[in-house]
Structure formats: C-alpha cells, structure tokens
Image (cartoon, rainbow over all chains, first blue to last red; front, side, top):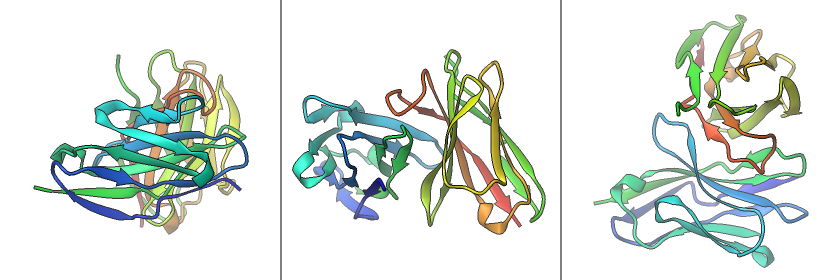
Length: 112
Length: 114
C-alpha cells in the first residue's frame, strides 16, 4: 500500500536559518507528490507539487522541493525561514486511485 | 472569489447521536473531498464526490456517509457517534476529480463527541 513517512514530528530552527523537512514515500509507479502547510486553526494550503519533469520544484512562499526517485524522497527546503513560517507541514502522495495520502506532519517552530 | 466554507465550525455531540456537516466549494469547482484529522492518525481520506457521484472512498466504517448536490455543495453524515469520531473534519474542493487537480481546503469543522 502507498504510504508517506515524515520522520520528524517537530523541528525547531532559528529565524533566518535554512530549513529542510524530510519526506519519504512508498509507491510503485511515478507518484504525484505534494507539500501542504497548515497554520493553527486553518485548513491546508498547497505549497508545491510534483507530477513529472524537472525534479526540483519551486513553490509559493520561497519553498522548493526535490524529487529523488532513488531515495524515494521529496524533501522540502527553504533557504531562510521567517517567523511566519511556523506551522505544520504535510507531505502527501497521490495514489493509483487518485486518492491523496498524507504523512503525519512535521510541526515547525521558529526561534527569534 | 470566496473560498471553501464549512458549517458549522464547531460542534459538540453525545455518543450515539448523528451529525451532518456541510461544505460549500469554491464557485465552479465540481469535486469535493472530505478528510478526518486527528492527532493520532493524522489526515485520513474519507471520500470524494464529483458531479454528485462518489468517486473514491477511504477505509472508514459505513457510519460515515456523504452526498453531493447539483450545485456541488456537499454534506457528510456520521451516525451513531463514537468518542473516537472526535476530530477536525476538513473539506477540499477542486475543479476536477483526482490528485491532478489542486485541492483548496476549508477551515474545517471541529467535532467533539462526549
């Protein structure tokens, strides 16, 4: 069965520091991959998505992610975080039935 | 353009009761998906409706059901509520069906079962 693993439940970084959130997936074919962000009391917002082509994907709010087939990974990065980036981040994969399966999420804390 | 709206935003129910949650998609969107979010299980897919037809269903018991109306608005119903049904229920709408189309999420309905 398809699955998504986000190994870090919480991550804390200082404002201005770089960020990398890890995501590994299990999927037989080329997956559709997504990163979403959820701020407190809000729904989810799509940051970026990968369907095919260039393995480095640019998203909104300065985020990017790289698809690495050999490692079954789709890590999210940002060169310099802002206090407003504190939120929960979800990696997700679209499975063969077109359902979207989410990871358990990584909560990002920002130190001033 | 108005976003996805969900009503009510908060709900408290007693075990054994039933509940109906409503979702109004973005104008022009024909697909509505429902998710259950809990601290332990995370986000789990419930079902997707497209053009009034259930297109996909997650692994939930038959107590969870839904429907979609001709104006694309959707409702989900949970019968015989259990304590474990306490969760944030999120609705998402998209132009088309399936993972290819970007999903826009509503703020959710927080259901507490006592």
